[in-house]
Image: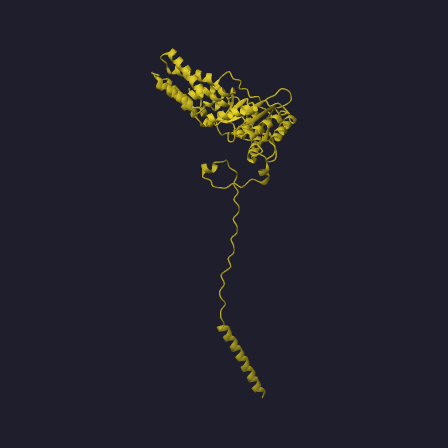
Length: 389
């Protein structure tokens, strides 16, 4: 009996082992999983030395310079040392000559002809009027030239050039006082009020004038009295920061007269040499705006005298600029003209017409878009640039 039971146990164990083997042999295989990829190590950062602008273009390099540290970004730009005003217009003479050859050289060509009949004189008159010399000054010039040509008779090129030079100098005026009143007697600073219509370049002229004065060794305070345009205030701040001039500004839409008053007060406090007050652009046809400009001047005069009122005119506006000048002169007693964009137009005759109509001299001229392209006006350099060497 025991033997029988043993056999049964052996058979059962064998059956269990057989079933387990068959299960292992025929069980479904697990679906192969994709191999796990090990991510590549990040490349080491490439650090290049800072290079001057344009170096990559010269040597073919394409490396990108890393940005400067945060403290360098917050650091104010270095204060610039502008060149002095002396000789500025001489340095810019070639630029003026290139843009004014229609006026000067056109007249030289006509006056050099062997025979000057009425048709030629009509052409001369047309050139002068087109160049914005004005109708009345043109007639005076043509009459003077006709008389002198008759006296001379035959004319060499040098004689024609001399003749035209003398006539233009006489019309531009060599005897006008073109002194820019940027210093005042006593301890107070001189006050320069900059006025004009929209778009003539008042804020830029104010900033460039600050550079001129700083280049001459003066201490300058700028007043951002154009409170209606935040961009104008920011622009003036940039000009001041570049040359180390303090800028007084007020809230956007604030009272311009208050800002102007505070600027003069700061100039007195800091013992500045000059305070330049930039005003908002005004249409000469808007009575309310012009009255406000008069208020700015009156408020300033409660603190200090206004020594210079500069009217900024765009040389390309021609005779329209003349009408603007007349209205401004009635409101704030303009003492000098700053002509901008004189390098971009052949209509330099506005120098003659604006002075003749207002009795106010051109004191500054803008001869380009660079920061140092504002120059004290020199009649002889101007005329020599018109007619060439």
